Amino acid sequence: MASCVTVLPLFMGMMLFASSSLVSAANVDFLYLVLMWPGSYCSQSVCCRPTTGMPAEDFFIRGLWTYNEAGKPVTRCTREPYNPTEIEGLEPELYEYWSSIKCPSNDGSLYWKKAWKTYGTCTGMYQPTYFETALDLRAQVDLLTALANKGITPSETRKYSIESIEKAIEEATKATPVIRCNKEGQLYEIYVCFDKLGGSAIECPVRPYFSCPNEIIIPPFTDNMLKIDAYPSINATPSVSVQ
Image (tube, rainbow, N blue to C red; front, side, top):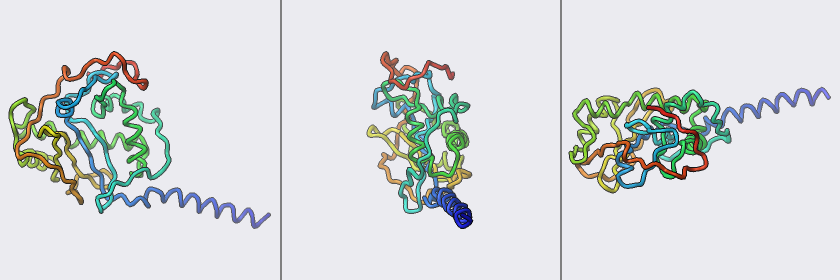
């Protein structure tokens, strides 16, 4: 019986060590903060107003993605479940800046769940910390202000050079962004790299390649681009105003 008592703590210790090593074994080297301009998304897709109300007229969070030094995504590192109760205090900001404007109308929760299970579990962060970090980094980057400070504002007709957009963001973040365009040659997404702890912006160890024209348009994003969906999806919640 004595030998069983001594072996059991050793076995449990080995199991705890294995569990605590899951995230470190994932070998995450940096994070992509991916921000999407909704005006460009809605210019080529039908968009619906979220069930939670009108989101911010700003860049949306597309994701905070975990990557290794080879430029490969590091995903689904643990089976830790998504628990919506853990982010209840963050929901007003998530409704504004991590919103889903896809149809049918929805509350965005399915996309938060996917983000957590795919990438969040690889960051080593607790679930609320992962979402709070993404929101904080979006506010820190503040792309709309960074561009406006250089006279770059959404317009139906005015074009801006890729170089001027890159320089405006680089001046604000101290890191060179990656710009992605949609098929209409409009500004669609901006990637900013951060260290694996989400502490500071860095030069991207690996830069994804996207083809953009030399000059691009940033179409305005307005309320009238979002249709009111009479048949929202089953994950809809009662409308909550975030304006």
